[in-house]
Length: 184
Image 1: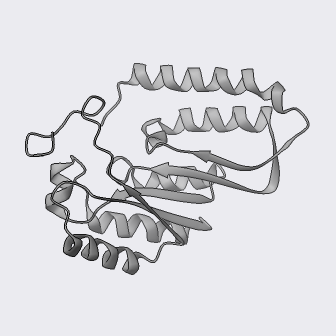
Image 2: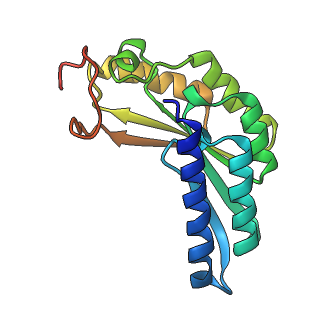
Image 3: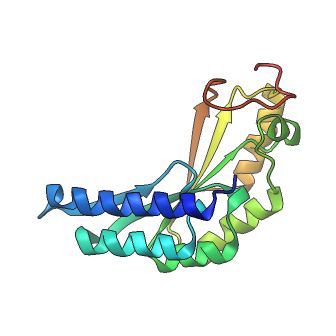
């Protein structure tokens, strides 16, 4: 999913305004955890991420050992962006893998490069991310106990610090279905 630059600017601008608007509600309090989630934060470019982190630091007091986490979509990130995130203070990484079975990935429009996922997680460790997480989803179209066992085996080889497993929620009114997905 590629966002138009005008959409990214709008999202970044609104998030920045929200940071400034909400900060007074937390005056005098220290932040011990920050999580950028939803799988899409890295659709913003490096400058936009830096701007938002600068606003957060200017408007909130972070503990020296704060956990600063970001969720990424492995289809939409490059290694140099990971370097940038680490330089901005992110120390926890969560990756939405969902499943390693190619047929399942194709049916849910989540095709991704397995080798790159391994490289991304290894690079995160090398540059100092202190915690890594993999998100999986069970109950996806065409997923079987055997195919999910294969996914779990691959995740075990990745050896993330954490594993989050969610059940599939079919929401055809929100998400467009692939033509191959028989559950639409």
